[in-house]
Image (cartoon, rainbow, N blue to C red; front, side, top):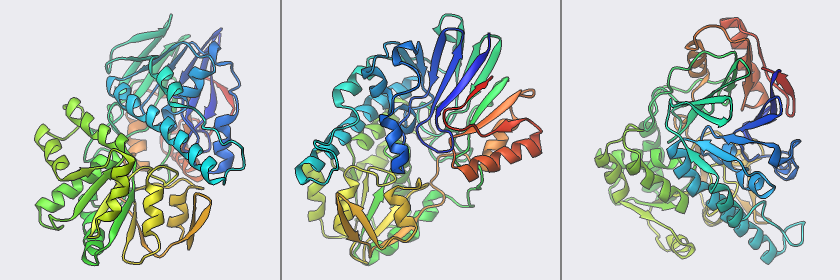
Amino acid sequence: MDVRIQFLGGAGTVTGSKYLVQHGSDALLVDCGLFQGYKALRLRNRTPLPIVPNQIRAVVLTHAHIDHSGYLPVLAREGFHGKVWCTHATRDLCEILLPDSAHLQEEDAAFANRHGFSKHSPALPLYTVEDAQRALRLLRPQPLYQRFEPIPGWQVQFFGAGHILGAASVLIEVGGRRLLFSGDLGRADDTLMFPPDPPPAADAVVVESTYGNRLHPAGNLIDEIADPLARAAARGGTVVVPVFAVGRAQALLHAIDVLKRQQRLPRALAVYLDSPMAIQATALLARHLGEHRLSAAQVQHMTQAVHAARTPDESKAIARHHGPKVILAGSGMATGGRVLHHLKLYLGDHRHMVLLTGYQAPGTRGDSLLRGATTLRIHGQDWPVQAEVVQLMTASAHADADGLMAWLRAIPGTPRRVFVTHGEADAADALRCRIERELRWPALVPEHGATWAA
């Protein structure tokens, strides 16, 4: 019997990763992510999967980011009752991210209903906190490298992928085939995470391509943020940082702490972490010492001078601080959450700054700012953009094109086929061309919904 992979997300886009592996009557889903960005993509989140959820026997997560885990509450609500297998740190992060994602969606729906700007009456969240809690009860953590059987006869192993806490590549052995899913691969020189593990041999490889057509510039995050933050502080401005709560927020807190200790930033520069999710994720660094580069002392020091805004009232109170400040608030592409309220307050003044910390998916507000938008639509209203917009180039937690190729080169033997996913069309195709030209392996970029034999 053939082993087949159906690409239900992460094909032709960097979000919504879902790979359905089928062998005989059994089906397993690798990743279960939300689509983000363009409305046409987001609408897929409300389109039923081509398989009834209760026919999926198990889910295996590569990591906890919402574009890889955020559809789990829908899957569980719609009848999936199997187990969700992941690493221990991924479990801990999902316990933070999934309820927070649900809460944000509930808040956004309630806000839309109060102010009447939704096209739907009433506006409904994609899923609720109750749905998220239902999904969390299905999580079953496993250590790296240890084989386990999510379905009888299916052997699975996790290998470290770098990127964020708990991130893993996944090897599935079933039906005489070895399938390797890269997940999101980290950088060899990441300031927080260790490099990805050398990958195992495989017959079929599914590799991400977020930076498949780009190389990271020389330099590091600490040096790159020094001048913009000092410049904004000198003019008394506020720096609004739409930030990914897991990984990116912690890297920035560490970098700001280093710059203050080096006296390259004023020690009095106020730093606010306005994200309950990021606050909790930062605390996990201490729980998972040895799984990242920072020592216990470094983790403690970088959090001492940060003002944590846990409640909505504490978030609103930030505006009453009138001196120079840095506000790190979710979400990383300014798609929702508390950062939108800060943007409304500070976008219209040239003294202030918006610091974009990495890739901005097409269709997001972050992408609009990056492209020089003069107004930004937030909560049904257009807000003028006068603030300085700066994009960081060294903050990415993804391997670049050379890093992806180095990981592929380390695979023992020759895979029968490589599937290039989780990238925009140009990035995915550029990586496909490099694989075929440099490695002489057959590679393709699957279309959304396509099924291929492994």
